[in-house]
Structures are given as C-alpha cells and as structure tokens.
Length: 381
Ligand SMILES: [Zn+2]
Image 1 (cartoon, rainbow, N blue to C red):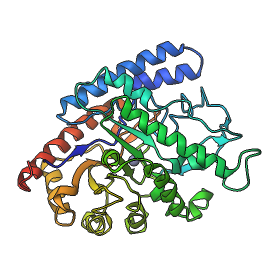
Image 2 (image 1 turned 90 degrees about the vertical axis):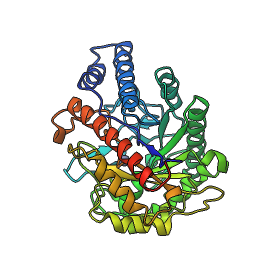
Image 3 (image 1 turned 180 degrees about the horizontal axis):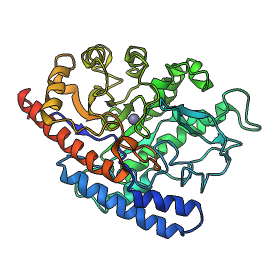
C-alpha cells in the first residue's frame, strides 16, 4: 500500500464568504443567504481538492465558525450561541503575533452540542466523488468551557465531563454514519498545555495528563477496527499566519500524546527547525499496539502559514528521512495544520484569503506528488 496522505481539514474561507459571515452578524442578510455562500465555498473546496489528486478530501470546514467552536456557535462573533454558554470564557490561545482567540464560558447544565460535524458530512457527501474526511474537536479543548476554578451552580465538573464525553462520542459516530471515511480529532491544546503563559492561566496548570486521559475516555468507546480510522491532530496552532506554541519542545508532548489510543496522528513537522530529531522521537514513542491498533504517523510536509509552495522533491526527501526512524508501514504525510482553522482569517502573509486558497491547493498537489514519489522509492507504491 502506498504511503497514505491526508489533509487536516480546513481551507481559508473565500473573501466573499467571510463578508457574508460579517453581514449575517450585522443582521444585513438572512441565514439562507449565508448558507448559499457556504454551499458554494464547500463545492469549490471539494472540487479543487479532488483536482489535486488527493485520495481523500474535505469540505474545507467552510460552514464552521472554527475548528473548536463549530458545536457551540454559528459565527465567531457569537451569533447563534448554544444555550448555557456566555461569550466571555477563557482564552484558548494567545498567538505569537499578539492576537488571541477566546472560548465561551459554561453557565449551567446540561452541556449539549448545537451542531454536530455530521451535518457538514451529509452535505459534503452530495458534492464529493472521493472519500471524505471530517475533523472534530477534542473533548480536552471543550473541557476549557468549564471555569478553571470553582464550580458552575447545579452542574459539577464531573457531570459536565461525563456529558462532554458522550457528546464527543456522538459527534464522531455520527460522522461515520453520515459517510465519512476518516475522522480526526483536533488537539492543538496539547502542545499549548506544555507552555506556561501567565497571560493565559490554564496553560500553567500542567493539564496535558488530564487532557490525554479525557480524550482516551472517548477513544476507548470505539473498537480497534473503528480506531484505525480515528486520528489525532497536533500542531502549534495556525491562525492569521501565526502560531501559539511553536517554542514548546516536542519532547514534552509526544510521550504523553502517543498514550492516546488513536489509530493515526497528523503532526505538524515541516516548520520544525530540527525535523530529524522529531522523526526520531516519533519512532521512539509511537506504538505498534495502542490497545489493538497500530499508530500510523502522518508527518507534516507543507506549512500552511507560509506562502512558499514546497516542491514535491522536498516533500519526498522529508519522507525518506522520516522513514529512517518511523516504520514505512506506519508512515503517512499531511499538512502541518488546517489552512485556516478559524472562519475569519485574512491570511496576512498570503495577501488575501483568496490568494491563500490558490496556494493551499498547490501545496496539497505537491504533497500528493511528493508522497507518491517517496512511496515508489520505498518500494510500497
Ligand atoms: Zn492545527
């Protein structure tokens, strides 16, 4: 079998769609009008991703407010916020360029998703002629909806976490039922948990262990056969062409991360300074048997924050080096992150979101070609 290759999930929303989100927030257009723009952007995303030769595609998350908030709110400005939530929650991340993104705050129970990712899969299914992947948010991110200290009146942390685990399991199961071939769980908070940023209190609490345990509560509800197609994505963040935890050493994250019983991992790597060291760490810590499933390691070979398009030769070279440390039957390739995890993202280093879309498809095409070259050289094509 050739080396598998898979996108993380998101693409920049076209400028026209971002304007429609703003008009919807301002009450200038109706919901139907926003949905028309989302339909058009999803169709364009799927068709263009299929044209890259990618064996598996996504709708680019064009309907989602963000990778983290899609179950909770229709737009990033908070239009259509789910019940029992207020807008003023914790920072989920403060990025290197100084901007931040904030989560809502839980005000009561019970906690329920308003939107499940399967709703996106159902619509994408009608547009795609290739297998679909869908990204979902990790319970460890949504655990941050609960106040860091203290208790929500009438709804204990324990009750909340139990509801959260149920909702995450349902989110994943429904994606498969709607026709997704693969589901990956976004775990960008994992690396950030190894940072201690006094401006962002939760990062200083050593929460990585709890995150891993919580995510395993969801993963352990799936059989090994199901977990073959359930992945985890790790990255140092990717928003407005900036990152939030690129300074965290992978050695602090990987040993814990591979304790999660997922069948595959999508890992930022192309923008690492010392890739070879990280390939070696992955080889050391990834598991042949994670509770019945081998952990396939998809290494990032393109950088969505940088407009320079990687050549297929560079990508092939990266994979050949990775194959020195990671068994070739457990090696895959991916992009370092989604190309735009948040719906409103001007992609400043790219000039515009529309230019960034064009570049994203070129990068995906390079990834597909470079991966096929490496498969041939490794004798697995
Ligand atoms: Zn990411």
